[in-house]
Amino acid sequence: MMKKKRITLFLLAFLPLLLTGQNPYLPLWEHVPDGEPRVFEDPDRPGNYRVYIVGSHDTHNSNYCGIDVHMWSAPVEDLSQWREEGAIFTYQIDGLWDTMYAPDIVEVKDKQTGKKTYWLYPHSRGDNRVGMVLKGIPNGGVVGFKYFGFGGLQQDAKGVRAFPGTKKGDGTMLNLFLMPRTSNAFRIHVRLGKHEMALVDVPVGAERAVSAYQVAVPKVEGLQGKHAIYLVAEGEDGKALFNLYGIGFSKTDTPCCQPIVPTVNITIDGKSLVLPKQPVFATHENGVTQTNSYQLRAPLHQGSVIKAVASVPDVKVEISPVTDGRASIRCTYQGQEKIFLIN
Image 1: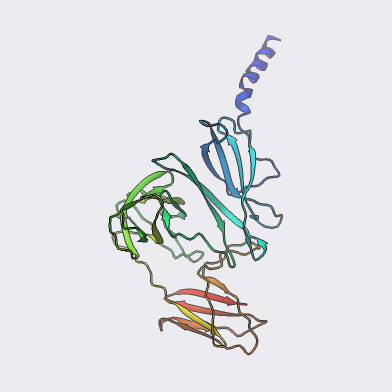
Image 2: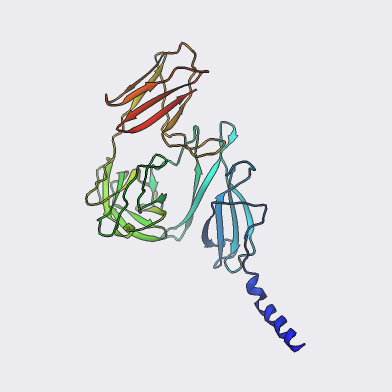
C-alpha cells in the first residue's frame, strides 16, 4: 500500500512538467505547415514573452496553402496554452482571395527610442500579383531573403543552374546592388539568421546610381542546408536611404556581375503591350511554376498579327499560332528562356 502512494506522489510531482507542452501542439483541426516560431514580448504582460507561430494556412482538402496568413501564440513558460490570433493578412486580386505561401515576421527595435516595429513578409505570388517593392528603405527597415543554399546544387533544378557552393578559404563576398537615396552616410547590417555577419558602410555623398557594394562574409563558407539573410538599414530617421536592386555572392575565382537583361517589345496588330515586371510564381490552384513565365492580357483572334522584337539580335524569338484566343512567345538568350503567355 505504501509503495502505491509513493508512485502516485511521484506522478503528481511531475504532472505540472508534463502539462507545459504537447504534441501536436495545435488542435487537430488546425494546420499551419510552414510555421516560423518567433519570441516577442507579450503586449498584454510587459516583461513576459510569448512564442508566435506565423505560417501559411491549409484550409483546402485538395491542395495546400489557403487564403490567409494565420497566427497562434503561447506563453513561453507554458507551451500547452495556445491561443488563436486569427488571420493577420489576406489579399484580393481580381475579386478573388489570393493564395498565401510561407510567410515570415521580424521585430526591429529602434536603438534611440526603443520603439518596436514588426515587419510581416507575406508570400503572395501569381498571375498579376505584385511582390514586395524594395524602394525607399528607411532607417530600421528590414529586407529578408530565404532561402540561400551555400552548399551548392548538384544539378539544375527549377530554373536554378547547378553550382559548386562555397568552401572554407574561398574568399566569399556579398554583393549588394543598390542606389543611395540620401547624401548622408548610412549602414546596412547583414544578418545570417539572428547573428550579424557583416556591415556595409555607404559613405557621405555616395553617387546616386546603382552600384555594387562588397563585403567579406566568411561565415557562410562551408554551410549546408538553407539559410535566411536579413539586411537591416541604419541611418537618418524619416528619410528613404536606398533602393535595392539585387543581391549576390562571389568568390575569388567567380565574380558576381549584375546581368544586363535584354528587353522585348511585343505588339499585337501594331499596338504595343505593357509587359509585367513580375513572372507568374503560382496560380489560384497552387502549384509552384518556373519563374520564367509572364502573363499578358490582350484580345486575340485568328487573324491577329503578333510581333516581338528584342533589344539585342542574339535573342531567339518563337511565336506560336493563335489557338482559342491564346498564344505564346518564347524568347531564348544565352540558354535562358522567358515565355510570354497571351490570353
